[in-house]
Length: 344
Ligand SMILES: NC(=O)c1ccc[n+]([C@@H]2O[C@H](COP(=O)([O-])OP(=O)(O)OC[C@H]3O[C@@H](n4cnc5c(N)ncnc54)[C@H](O)[C@@H]3O)[C@@H](O)[C@H]2O)c1
Image (cartoon, rainbow, N blue to C red; front, side, top):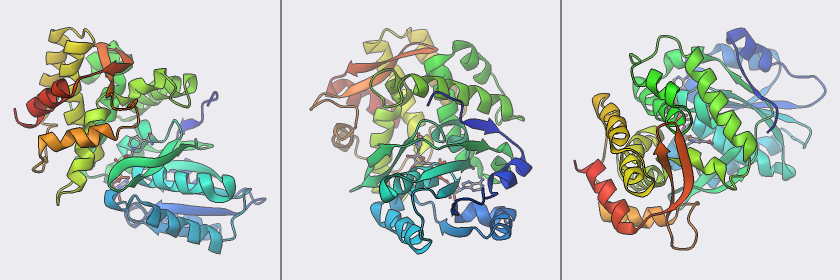
């Protein structure tokens, strides 16, 4: 991804993005809830005779079975490889539909209209897509970037607070791994921000710069996984309970624990680690934790895609604004940090 594929836009830009180019078939696959809250989206699709498939974004249904629904729809619409799929929704919808499109007839182009904070600030860029398999997060996946991404912050006005607070985890992560000044601004900002535009611009610029240098995660890009090794393990474990954590909620716990590990393994100044954890606690971001057996988390950690063999590899902070991948960390260190985060 060398060129900038994203642009911030207003509602008319989203309507514009729904215009077909007349030469190729076009379909819309969208989050049902978003379309209920923003019915003008479906009206615009109907005006352009664009067939629509609505999906329910439920993490436990981020599966191959739901992909099959997308494939059935593409088949019914006789979509060939020159067609265009417009994907509208949060990270769940973008991940799943992009994955389904990426294997449809060996690859169908798609554009993203992200609607959650997490998707607008993070998931819409970089081409990672996929579904969960046997309960483990994103075990089946591909690198398939969207052709274009239109970001309208107005969608966030209908997003529940819980989702906003979860999405903020990825924004804070961008600052922690890449930009100390940005962290200084964010950590003193009244929450929620009154203007999302500067936040989205900064986050998309950071993520865009990292993924364009390492599109297939062969090294540098792994820094984006700060907080995600333990976060994903916790999220996967929570998906087996009746009250699963949201992705971003699990990442708050993951960043809390991995800031502690960063002090021990990556030379992060303990005062900096403490400041990160104090911010997360003061803003009450450690919430909604179901009952989890901490020891079982190691089994989920072992399924992490960054591991090599049985060695757990983490991306850690070397300082605020700087991260590095590939730290091999012993099980005891992981369990200790996780225990501290989950049972303070
Ligand atoms: N590909 C990537 O780089 C990447 C990065 C981070 C996370 N993810 C994935 O993203 C998923 C989480 O995505 P998410 O946090 O965006 O949430 P989501 O897509 O799961 O949506 C969360 C809820 O918000 C609703 N919703 C979406 N937009 C709305 C709006 N504007 N107004 C009101 N309700 C709205 C949805 O219907 C759903 O109920 C996880 O599966 C995670 O693995 C992918």
